[in-house]
Length: 141
Image (cartoon, rainbow, N blue to C red; front, side, top):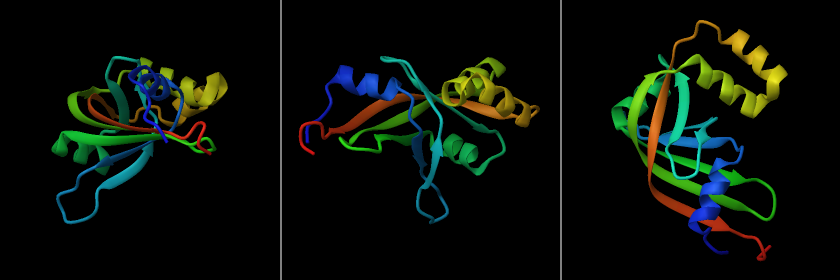
């Protein structure tokens, strides 16, 4: 196993993967851990959106920091874990919802997705990557 180079880890994170987001809780329960869509451009911040009234949104607001794990689920296994600080939160613009739905579902799926979530209030969180952990099993498995 080897670590990704900086360029490799940023390119891997920028590709389309479903991430797993973890955020601390304050009630003695383990960290809240959920799959989530995300947007990332190499060298920038990570952006995720969730229902404004969800437990996840409230925990992210309170904690101010999250971990995000992204993996390749078939051999050769690869993953990037990012620990980051929440640097901004705002109501999610419709354009962001549309763009991320198209990224994950394609044009037709995004239309259906947008119809199902019409009128839902959501929060867009911007996360600054602070620490990276990577693994690349190419050439090993």
